[in-house]
Image (cartoon, helix red, strand yellow):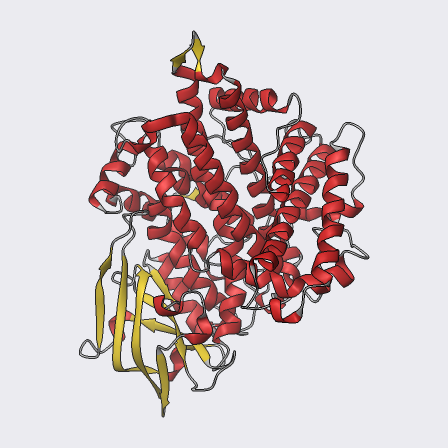
Length: 588
């Protein structure tokens, strides 16, 4: 017997639903996570989505993880971050760098419903991990911790946390390490958990801190070799940067549905708001942006398996652009909804909550600037190699969306014996029904060495006559212009001292990557005969929006596409389907 997560969470508009919108909003006003929501996710076994299949969980492919967890984000980003995804952010470091014993221990904790936390950053140093001061000094077979980490999600109620700490006094990338620390094994006289930090968005998330004073932990707490903390963290970032924007699509799906319903029912000027050209264009434009982010995030997730050596580019671009496009779409939709989005209760109040919460997903554990700085140093090599002789991306990068996702109603199966190799891949062979290869952290590199098979699709794609040939051609010209500009960027402007003009190069890259992902998704959908994904009008609208962002000014949607996209919204609203690429059944 299986039960889908949408069914577990129920109809968000049902006032009697213990995890419905009204209860979520009341919990948010109190600054709490909805207890009934956490109980529902625990009963469904959400943590199993974060545990590799070889360790008894359900994690087999990154894009399936996104589809499985997205229903939570459709309702409450605080619940999605506060209950689950923070545990994923911590756990990927263990799957990447941990020993078999550490992997087994973390899998056990998650599968019995415990939470994890991850303490990377220190507010004094922002996203600059290299300047972190929290220290872990070697003392025989111990490490002695000293310092403080603040603004750490779930630190006060986690069973274990991953800690980024300085293990050498020298400067450079080998001065820090990652540690796996279990809370109940700490000396309470030498550790203090700091008061909660309140926020205006994701108000239910419990941000706290930890302060250590000569706190002993066993040297076996190290994750990976000493001094490899930066490298291991940046590899783990590639997974979470790909996953987070795909999850955030769920929140914008709900926001778009809220505004659509308002526009359908609100009478104005002898008709409805939906009859107004501006409202229709706004709704259609928001859907086009949502589809662009979904295409890019899906390609980035599947690229972790298929193009891992290029994931440093694709995941950083997805994280940066996903936040920008989704937040921008929400702000445009707020104009249609008007002052109602300020309301804290009622049928439109969830829109305002999503609008407040969404920027936190964009910030996360690595903000926009950090993502752009991951791209900038790689652009000159791409200009010399990838875009001069572009390679075709693997067809499986654009495989169709997975079928219905469900979880066992019973507890997870008995845990298998852990693998003997600490560098073993993330999942068991042939675990993914879509045929993706294993997610092998050893193949995730910090730079792509001039390879980018995805963006090159703009230069090589053969667009059928009924497709938006002129838009693809214009975007290909934009890629050639980016190659010329990137090739002449002085070395001094390719690192932390990058100026706004150089930052703009990375933003242009992210927009072009999203365009390539959309083109690949459309071509694959057309080949499969998919009635929506193979339809050229969604692609034309999406590419027009992306081209407008490249040009720095709003671009009108191509003729006929706005009305067609609005009809798509109305049809899916009637049929109870999601607005994303997968068009899956949802409780609305």
